Amino acid sequence: MGARNPAFDVRLPTSQTGYVLDLGGVFVRDFHTGERRYGTIKDVGDAFWKN
Image 1 (cartoon, helix red, strand yellow):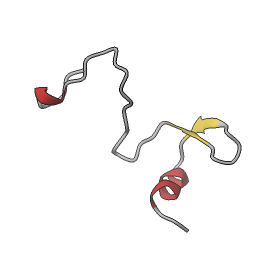
Image 2 (spheres, rainbow, N blue to C red):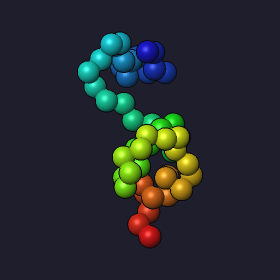
Image 3 (cartoon, rainbow, N blue to C red):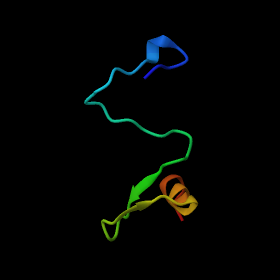
């Protein structure tokens, strides 16, 4: 996958894990139930701010 800066290109397939850094996680794993589901804005808040 080509990045804007070629130094950050990612060769596929890869064994590395990727992260979404724009607060747009598509799926999450519910900590309490273990269920995989679509992420919500509440999940973003839970990940970054303690209540």
